[in-house]
Amino acid sequence: MNDTATGAIPQPLYSSRYKNLVLALLVLAYTFNFVDRTIIATIGQAIKVDLKISDTQLGLLGGLYFALLYTLLGIPIARIAERSSRVNIISWAIVIWSGFTALCGMAANFAQLALFRFGVGVGEAGLTPPAHSLISDYFEPRKRASALSVYSFGLPLGVMFGAVMGGWLAQNYSWRVAFMAVGLPGVLIALAIKLLIQEPPRGHSESSAGPAPAPHVVADAPARTAPTLAAELKELGVVARAMLRNGPVLHMSLGITLASIGSYGSGTFVPPYFIRTFGLNFTQVGIITGLVSGFSSGIGTLLGGFVADRLSQRSPRWYALTPAIGLAIAAPIYITAYMQDSWKTAAFILLLPGIFHYTYMGPTFGVVQNAVETRRRATAAALLLFFLNLISLGGGPPFAGWVIDHFAAFNHAHPGVDSLFASLGGFFSAAPQTFQAACPGGAAPVGATADVVSHCAGSLALATRQGIILLLCFYFWAAFHYLLASFGLARK
Image (cartoon, rainbow, N blue to C red; front, side, top):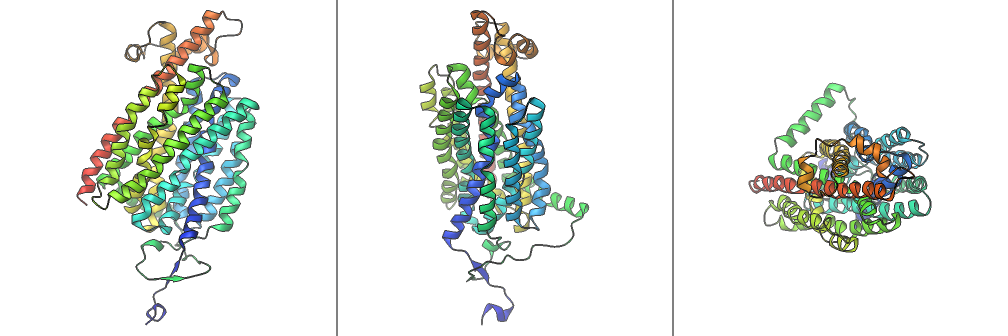
C-alpha cells in the first residue's frame, strides 16, 4: 500500500549536497551580516577622530543605534516568517541592510551616521530568525546544533573580513569608502538566495513518513489564517512561557546574553585598543583582529555544535557544559592577552581563547530550536535574539564606551595611577565631559605641547585596556548560568 492510497503526503527528499548548498548560502549571508554590522569597530577610531565624538557615542553607533530597530522588528518579522516565504524575507532583508551600509559612507555628521545605522538594523532584523527556521526544517534534531554552528560560523568570518577589508580600505582610502565597498555586494547575495534556495515544508526534518524523491520541491502551504493583534500576542506569550518555564533554556539564554555583553562590549574597542596603545595603523589592526577572529573564533564556533552533538549521546548535559567550560577557560586567557606590553605577544595569545569562547553559540541555538514546535521556531529565535541583542548588542558597546570614558577621565586627572582597582575606586567621581573638553575625540587639541599630547593619548590607551578587561569578566558570569542549565538538562 502506498502513501497516496492512505492519504499520507510523501515528503520530498533533499540531497546532502543541496542541504549543504543552502547552508553555505545562509552562512554567506550571515557573514556579510556581520561584516556590515561590525566594520564600525575596525574603522571606529577614524570616525571618532573625523567627527570628534566620544567613546560613548562610538559605542552607541556600534550598539544601541543599530540594535534598537534590529531587535524590535525581529519579532514581527519572525511572526511573518511563520506563515510566509522565509526565502523572500531573507532576500529583501539583505538588500535593505546592504543599501543602508553603503549610505553610512555618505554621512556628514554623527546624527546622519546614527540614522543610517538604524536603517542597517532594520534590514538585518530579517535574517537570523527565518534562517534558523529554514535550517531546522532541513536538518534533523540530532544534527541541528552542528548545522546552526556552521551557520554561526558566519559571525567570525564576517568579523574577519570586515576587519581586514575595513582596515585596509580605511588606511588606503577612507572610512567612508570602507562602508560603501562592503555594503554593495549584498545585492548579489540576495539574488543568489532568491534563485537557489527552495522553501522547505514546515517540519520536514521531523516527519516520520518516508521521504520521496522530488526533483522540484514544493513547500507545504503555510498557515494562511488572517493574523490579529490578539492572536499574535497570544502566540508570543505561548512561546515566551515555553522558554521561560524551561529551566535549561532560560539559563542558556541568560548565558548567551551575558557572554555577548562581554563580546560586543569589548570587541567594539579591540581595534581602537591596538591603535591607541601600540600606535598601529588600520591595516595592521585589521589583519590582527581579522586573523584572530577567523582562526580561533571560527574554530570555536564550529567545534561547539559538533562537540556538543557528539557528547550529548552520553548525556544531554553537554549541550550546556561545553559552553560553560569553554567560557571559563577563555576569560583568563583573554585578560592575560590585554595585559601585555607587546602587541605581538598580545596578538599571539589572542589566537587561543576564541577556540573555547565561541563554543556557546551552536549548542544554545540548538537547544532553543529543539524546545518548540516547528511553526514556532522563527518566533523562538526572534525572542532569544530580542533579549540577546537589545541587552548585549544594544547595551554592551555603549556600556563599554561609557566605562572607558570614565576611566579616561580618572586617568587624566590622576596621572601615574594605572591600577584597575584604583581606577574603579574613583570611577563615579570622574567627569568624562572634562576629559572630552581637554582631549576632544581622545586627542590633544591642535598646537598642544608634547606633554599634553602624551597625557591625552596615555590616559585613553590605559582606559581602553581597563574597560576591555572589565567587560571580559562577564564570561565568568555567563559560564555560571550554563553550569546551572546543565543540571536541568541532566533530568530530561
